[in-house]
Length: 206
Image (cartoon, rainbow, N blue to C red):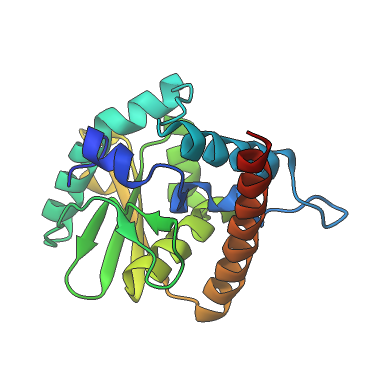
């Protein structure tokens, strides 16, 4: 199953996905869910009721990232001499209506998550090696879904390739954190239970 195909969109319809885990786990300063929590819930309920994907606005930055993802993986494979197997949607092993679509599988234990940010964001990562918390959550849930032990976070920007291959791409390996995964899984289960309650109310009203 190729990502961003009709089959892929159908497979993840109405389900919690790794790229949106931050909307579920993130809390306000008072420990309450953020507005994104409710927005994501409504999105998934709508998809379940209509059987159709709710379209979301693709920013120029998102379009740039999607367009350069293949090049980033090719560069990673070449530079690190590591083959990457592309994959589609992988269901969570124990949580129904949840899953992940990693950018690729590496061997029997690894994953790859590629980001193609603006050049300034890329340089900041080269210098500081810091990954946004929402990306950590995304990768941990990917590992929860796939059973993998680590994920290589990759930042890529082709602007620097003439200067040095090591400047255009940088990988940082993130190990599986079972304690964090347990926390994420519980949050997802609570979120999905709330969706089921809302679905029952809505369908009864009809």
